[in-house]
Image 1 (cartoon, one colour):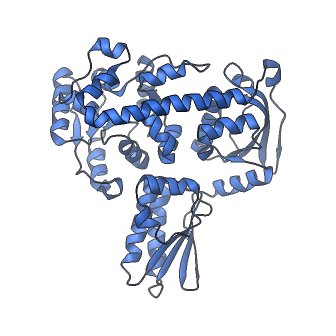
Image 2 (cartoon, rainbow, N blue to C red):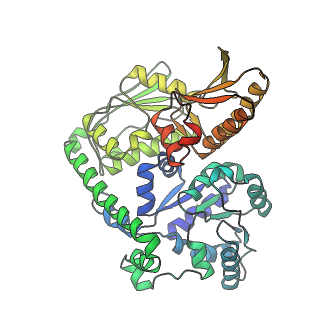
Image 3 (cartoon, rainbow, N blue to C red):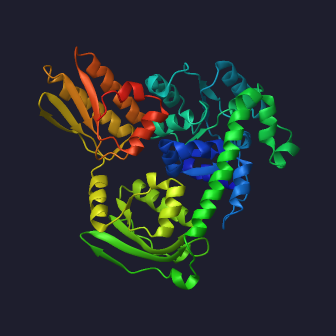
Length: 460
């Protein structure tokens, strides 16, 4: 907890837009099915473990989590700390009565805390929010800390869509914590929380809503822990002697590194890392074993590459790597290619991910847009304006097609872009929108949002 507060201090001092995630077991279960939520986890500034079952499960790994840092514990500590530091807090989401009660109780408990701002937007799906009004309310308050209570995963997806534009250095999805602060929902006694059984207390409070979810989550934990343990064991062995880093070099402007041996707890520090000042390729063909620590190294490396606008790719994963990456479903996130030729193609596409305009061409009465490898908030906004301009400039056309052949990821901003395109095309009588060459990750985001009926009727 103290380290988390220190981390938040650094974020606020740097004034760099960031977000934290408090992940419990249900969050993990949802992320296993929702590629957008999984990517949000990977890109978070900090992921806090908000579930005791996850702490227990981590003890089966070579590097267990030291403790649970729950959002419901963090927020009061953060308010106390903000009183000392003069940080401004803003509450977003939930019922207006809960927000008023939470703000009032925080001010009463921490009287020197700067005035707590809050705003309760009308309930709506993510793609129907009046985001302009929400952003104006937050930017007017200029908070250091934004606490969002839309519920998981809605709050995390909203934060991911907007945190860069907001400019708030610390955004956190807090779920039911606002109701705890307002006194609408009681927390478990301290002795229950210490035993790790707070989830049972919560279930007894709301059995109809939580019992089925908790049962599903426990089943997920048991199944996934078994599958991951079996995949790691089946991947083979590896000794410190095997773990000597492979040769490095360069070709065609790429930094090339080969890893060999056991990419596991105790050995990961022995592996060579790219400089991240240019595109890179890492050969995994000689990796004999990988565990959760090894996966963590791979994820942090790619995250740093994304943050620095550097393109990178792993190639030729060994059987050991492939087993673990697939069972954790991180093959949806990590850029992995079978050959060097595929890796170079991936890097070329990734380097061109953010284009100033979509590539548009007209043929056989169809306006076709080729979309980039990633569609998130900035890309969706730029593309939306460009697509509208191109479409309105061709009033005789009756069909628009969006080609997703190069697109491996969209977030909820990308869904908003698709819905706006659908509505815009629908305003022209007899016109239709088709989505072409949809890949698994894009289909996943559409299906999780339950928008198949709207967007996939003309899919090819």
